[in-house]
Length: 318
Image (cartoon, rainbow, N blue to C red; front, side, top):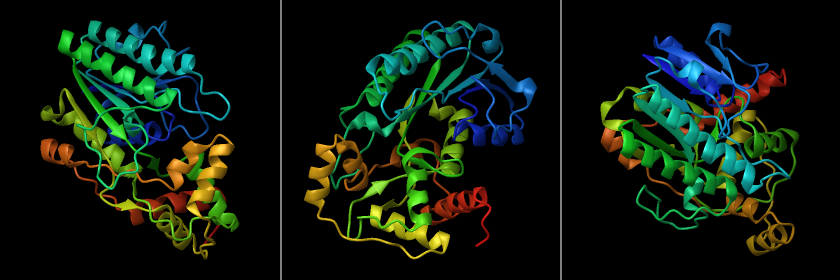
């Protein structure tokens, strides 16, 4: 089987490529440029100039059986304009899928976001039947891409599989989770003592196994799946687990939730309040029942793997 992997140098792609190669697949990776931690063989790289509506994938799609589309425009500080998300995440995905149909690709796996449901603070777990309500440009662009892919699949017969992911953690994690690791390592006091929210995350190893299951399982075709770790966790407990894995005492203090919400709302970071104080529980029952995928890496194991990588990057011996 021949697989095209876009975003091969990202958090998921850089771990998925060696796993698929180890399992004997012929894997090609589409990259904008080679990064320092790439493990990808030169002969497996296809360099592209952009991911938008004018992208030409014809040179790499020949004989491809499965496309795993990881590459995307992700939220960045100071630049989250609708136009960029629209062009890359929506139009770019649609363009790749149309060209994949022409190349007779059999299956197209799209990595989407749990953010399609918007902000949720419910005690009830979200599932694939919940109403979509994206509340930012990134999530909206993912929703638009999903709808376009489903339409293309219905019209052409190419199998579409959509995976909706919560926050992914593991080696080479970036953004907010990496900042949290930095804060705990540096001993910076954090205002989450007593926070009892409930959020689902997903360990990188669990993501990889879910994608592989969707590549090989015939029953996965034309399905939308939420995937996550089994356990949910509070921000307080997350920091406790990171501190334990680092061998450091947790430095937590109490901040009234109403005060945190007011402050972050005033400075335009209500999204950060929702992520750190709010709840977001999800239910992965559908993918377990449909194709038998179960997350095999626990939160404790996933955090230990992530922390071990983080400490090794700093050349620290515990």
